[in-house]
Length: 166
Image (cartoon, rainbow, N blue to C red; front, top):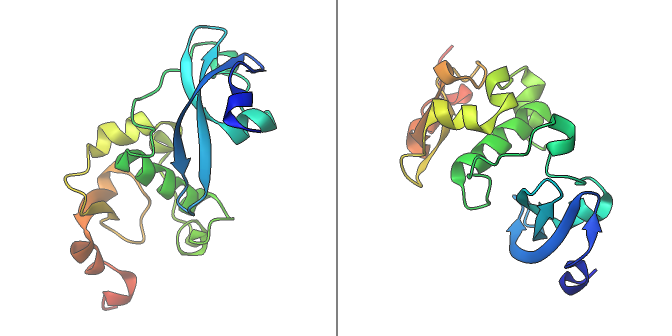
């Protein structure tokens, strides 16, 4: 369906008002995104395929009984949000190609972070620079505030399992 045909259509409680910037997934897939207005008055950005499939029918107000509030960092441009999504996938999604090295080994994300990106951001803070990535201090431990830090690739390489002497 072309973007022009999406504008003005209603999907559940969501009314498509305009097209926004496309989202490029970590695998390189391009997803068209749309600004939608929920019946409760909340404006959110939703991927077109989520609207068409019926996956997104409201801003979240129907499920949670309170209007959806964005943390303001869920755009593809937010490196912290991207990091959070990636650690969630590799630890809790068996379909992720890295699952065997993380979730498959029993590494999990703490429940506080699993429930909320805002909690992850509050605990970790902003990434110090584009060269910093999330790193676990104990590479056998879970992703949790006391075991994670922002580190450069060079610092991370020194902490790899195959580099440590047993």
